[in-house]
Image 1 (cartoon, rainbow over the protein chains, first blue to last red):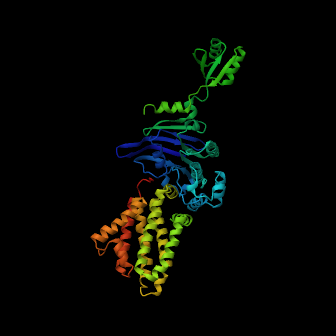
Image 2: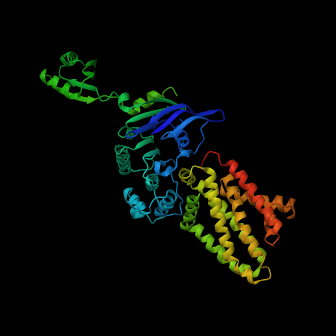
Length: 291
Length: 200
């Protein structure tokens, strides 16, 4: 469980984070969205004890990071790209971290396999591509088998296959009861991954809610059929709210299956029945528009 | 703290350049001890300082400082661990490379340097903890030695590098002075450990 409570961080006159509050709960993936310089990374760094808060609290399992007894076994974090010595091999990097975390060295080989770096484990990290270094960073975060993952832009440098791999990894972690707080610029990618969304702009949290609550929960449809007037009538009679824009109906309040059945029994052919929920990108820009 | 010491040792042993510098200095020091004991003491001092300073600041340069402080969020414990690791390595290099001195007329230099080298490593760690960039740490240290201790102090004032060089001649009071300087550096570094962790 991650809790950010009335967190403020100032640098001189600049309020990088301004009275921010939100939480990330076990079993769910929380997306942390914001433009560059909006305060995302500062918030995550305060959470991880790398930066001191001016006021407020950032807690992991109800304790500040610095009070955790075995931090690497409770929290896995990716906050810096290229956080590895270029003269060390990938395996040596992970072994060094394993020594530090008090983790069995046998876990290193399992992790190298899991992140797809087993074949290049003996190469120095200076020879790694950005995607490989990102996979190594994720492996480093997973070393202590932590229940909480804090990932700052983990998809940077990953190819489509890597992004798919990361998505599966994050979803599996949440499904197993873990907590995931993830920040990313890839909004469309995040949309398929997250359960909850936190939007931050100019250091202030603009929104913290389940994604389904923002997008309408999949009950908004765009319907096009042969007879829009009749369709509108049968949908409204069944309890839906309908707005029309010419031949296209914007229908809310009923599932797609019921809309299809209603059209079928009214003998109106349907040409198009598609979700018209606002996507994450649209929500994000709407919430951050004033900044 | 032991985990930090083990972390630093393992890192030194697996980074080729770090391991190479330990082996090279030890190999260079062996014949130098026969030829010129003062040059040997200087080599050990310079190595202890630069190795500790570069090792500590490389965490910031290569962004591994984040991993270090995520693994051990208590900053003073990290400082203590790094200090112990580099103090031990510097004493080991001095002890191995200076065996030639034991048979010569300046045998007193050997124990004096083996004892002083860890304090020099402590100074290296504290300088790097404050400055965080290897290049600036080394430029600062050289400038200090040349300008303040050399030109102004004429290598007679009881300043850190001067008392190290005097101490390696076997002057116990100078060794004590040098340890006082290392302790002062450590206190300043402890006071500075609360700073936010940023990287290059």
